[in-house]
Image (cartoon, rainbow, N blue to C red; front, side, top):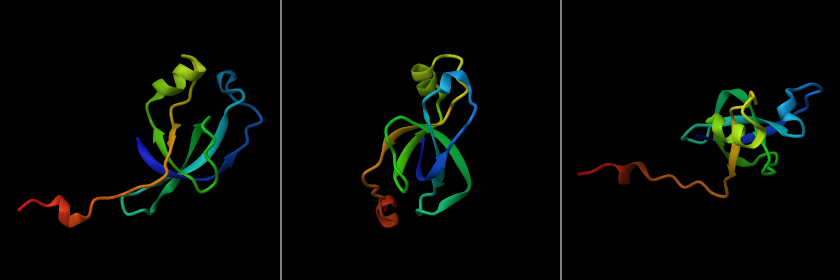
Length: 96
């Protein structure tokens, strides 16, 4: 799993039969410092994530297979919409 920011949508004229009716979103993976990774990813969403939302993305295809069937080619899905991210301060991670 990783955090990502939703940066757009994808419209598909043709897609695998198991994915009929699902939403495809463009997600940018977030690094620990809040910056985005270079490569955009396409994720499936049924939770209603919007543009600019921070989401938790699962890379485990079991979630997609459970919802869309065993033959679905999907793997990355929005598993949650994040309200807040709080990072530990670097000094508090160190032990004496």
